[in-house]
Length: 88
Image (cartoon, rainbow, N blue to C red; front, side, top):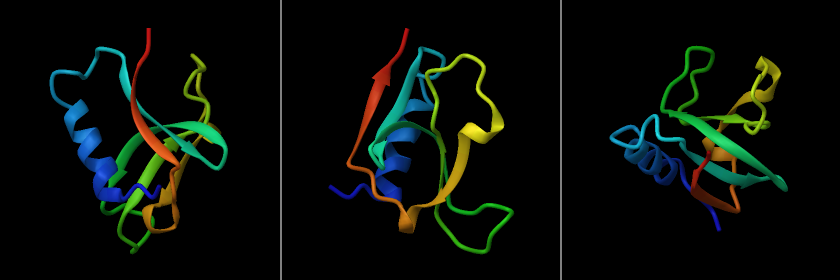
């Protein structure tokens, strides 16, 4: 299954409404690892390319560090699945 930038962006927009702050997040399977999709952006300041996804590799940790986050190009990224997850 290929999940497009638009599909991920639609799911994230749904979470920015009344669900925000309730512990809900978007998680996806990416390269045999479960990651959190933190943000989807059409443009970023560090590149002229369009379509970027900001992911966190270790979203289950309380004290996340900068190296656990990464911007990836949506055109080069394929998720096996994307789901809403309600944490505690």
